[in-house]
Image 1 (cartoon, one colour):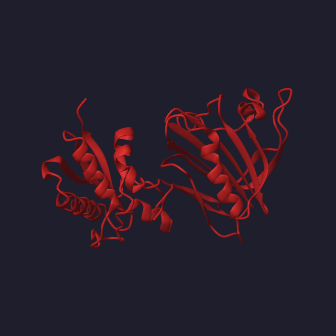
Image 2 (cartoon, helix red, strand yellow):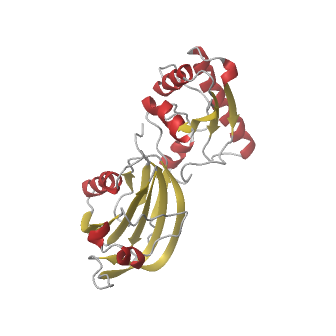
Length: 299
């Protein structure tokens, strides 16, 4: 099971594709790729209005994500797990800085940053990290703001390769389903795993459904919708039917836990609300899911 959102980096040949763990649930806000372009990588902080940099050329992919984070989460809590995963996979940090240490306003506005709402930079708290692995370069920028945090990743690989950056949102940790519903109104039930084309749930205990049932007992007037999703294999009509069947399968388990059927509605949206790209196995797996959506709750 995935315990954190995944940023998939298909690295330059001959490097293998790499999964990069994000520490919080995330959705992709920007996705661009160019077979040949250039990108400036900072090599030091801003001084006297100038930023030292190296210009790298090659296949350039840029992605941005928005993460849901606990209020007050700092930039280091967002970046550190990403950095540590990269280092473990052979990436070498070349330059890192934080807010004032980066040079503040001058540094941020020197960077090539996607425009809001795809990416937002809080000038009171942001971090930059540049890394290298052989001929590849990777630049990360993270910045939290309230209950959201933003990350931009720019990957440069040698010309002729195709760096692919894809984002898959993390399933909500099973025990945190109630907290996620209260905070954001939705929770991915990540321990409900489906094979392509199947709505079958193996006989097992599902912690996410236990947590959802507990939340509904604690908030007796709340109602939820279970929304089924699929990957993009097959046609639209068949996938909508399968996604609805997945939601119905989860509802039956929830009702068996003592939840009144009238408090749980079901819907299926097929492949029309993906969490990740469907051209990777990991992305398709993430897209085959059931989400709980808070429909009504007392003031």
